[in-house]
Length: 269
Image (cartoon, rainbow, N blue to C red; front, top):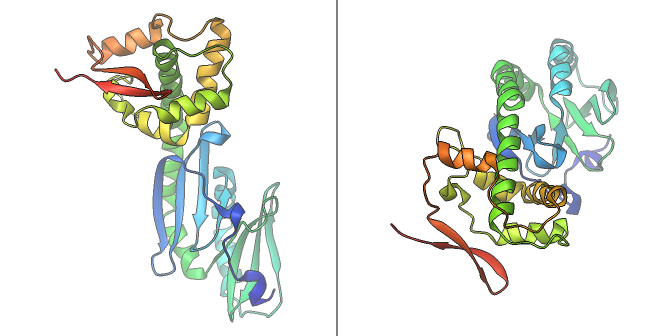
């Protein structure tokens, strides 16, 4: 593998989609390498793990990371061997990711590469791998927390927000998901002020609006289709219960249509 093959360059397909409740760990501050863990709205809010370098990144699953950790002793021993130019050694391959060892600039490096998405590849040195090994248990803890607790909270709050918006914003049944998405994007950013989520529960409302507006629109659209009427019907039991839990008697914010867009109007008490 030549230096040109490994040299990283940004392109149009390398944009990072935003994750919800992201936790970042630094692998190499000087080399600007990190691992980012969060919920991916485009994948049903499953946990997504990204290893990020200055110009590229690769997405891996929690299962693949566990397999990488199980092979870490073997990988470190191979990386420590004297580098052999132009020799590539395959270590692991699944349906989306390839793990191999290469020689790059006189050093052995681990390459984690997607074989489904062109250009998704990162290089990790022995020092980077040792840092990952040191963070193993805290990374596993974060993944478990997001998988077993945070994901269910975010999905529940998405449904609750969709129910509230459907109940309070008039929308024709004929609207498409894209049109509903546009309405959501025009709503005031600070949804937490509406107290849709009970006060005793950590709110992801603003993150959901900003990073999962399409999924929120799909949920709203589904409720509209199931109900068979346009928006603006009385708030359902779930939303009423949430409002009661939040001790909200009267909403301090109401929605108005301004220049064709749904915007919040604030009332100070």
